[in-house]
Image (cartoon, rainbow, N blue to C red; front, side, top):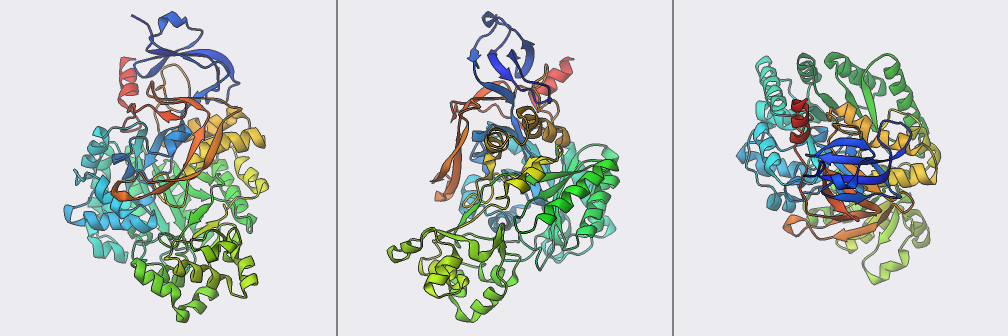
Length: 576
């Protein structure tokens, strides 16, 4: 009998520890790394030739919304195409458990705007064979997966379950009995395998209210009481396990930072702060955040920033666009049915309010948005024009250019908002902080206008190879080991003996992100934007090859990682 199920031979190993790369072999047995060094190929049932290739730990993505997609897409595309082998779901306090049967439709509706997940896909693709959070995890566990899943306990469903929908949406302070029940449910969920808790806490109205419910109202976590967060943090302290993720924007930076610190101190556990983002027109924003995070580290406060490091912009139409919600007039005009939205966006009486409160895009004022997909022949003359330039030529206000064309084309006109970190200088300032987590892919969400799941490939190609901002050794530590350590992925993120065999094998010189595509592969007849990668010769999840030459092998070796542990590394630890 061969000693190893497979051996990766003659690769250049970048092991995720920040140690210098070295040439060697990796022997895999029962899903874990059994040996590293020089291994006789005769000892392997299968040999993977990695000559001339980089061998590194699979990437770990801490910010996804695959809670629904995992049930119809075992590969959680696009993440797995880009070497991601483990993800965290349940971010921002959004999820589907516990949810009573009569609230399932409302729970799905909630995700249609805030994360832009198509309702038809959720209705057709989710089994809903659960009510409680432990039952939800059991359903994820038995679902075929080509990627590992670590689950947050999202706080939104807990609040609705305990307080009732109306009281939760009104932001009422829970009674002592209700707080006790919320705490009990969090403990129950973490006993079943939850890794901690998450919440979006955006200003309910005004300039910081960006991500709203389908009807334009705040999400329940936006209006939750501070004391509820404190009770949840105490749970992690008592358990001495888990971590937290929070997107907190109240409009008062000092107050927000103090609350992040309070949660980390009260819990004694890591707090993932979303999001560190460079705005080309406001560099003082990310610089202020980086300085604060550095001060947290110096004071021993476990607040860790997650950076938006991809330059994926937004290609969108007004059929599904929701990221102007920070402007009340725009939020109101872009909610409702298709016909209602067309009527509101065409209404001359509304136009002045929309002009008076033009939203800022990631890179600057709304007039810098580009017209990338006019549908009518007469409008194609404006292809690749900014709204500002087209407006000057037409003699019209940029808002009128945008909305007249969108309404005329049944809201199908495509526009492009450039990425926030267009400046290489500002991106480098974020990357230069050695403890900023890469990512914020939002995998599974915003699928009609965002492809940020490409960020690991982009990091290697752009940050390392093209601009030399950091070494390849540093990049793999940041893409795998650091997030795995923060999130409690036991044993993952590094290529060391005894670790689960989550491994990427790729062609460094020829690795690239391929152009944007539209594919019609979602349940319910829905479509999405994707970007594939080229150069991943092999991706292994728990020791099995899930991707070969950039194509899925239909191998479902991913696991639900209860408490950060999969079956394979739990068995390996037990054997020790």
